[in-house]
Image 1: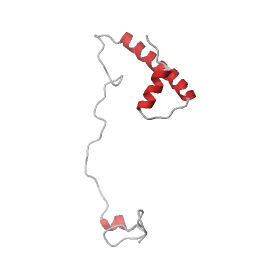
Image 2: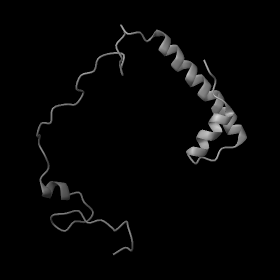
Image 3: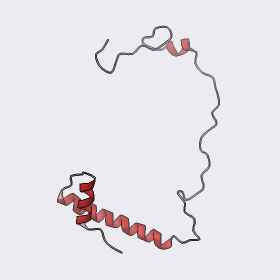
Image 4: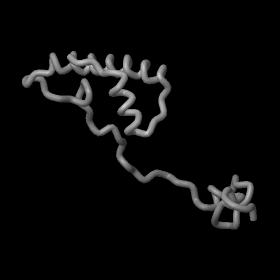
Length: 99
């Protein structure tokens, strides 16, 4: 297996326009080497009779059914609002000048 070099990490950082110090390049080189070794180990055991998976156990739809339930009326929703105009909440402007 080939190891990743500091020159390769430096080149990739340059392509990505990421400024890295020499110490960061050294650290990333070691970390990327570990990642490549882990991938190589997985590739050793990944054979044609083992199907590719994204999860160790099968998943089914985890969303609940979208069922209409009891909702608040406009008056109930606005009853606790500090300010409203009868049909909508009134809030201070958050962009630009306050009105």
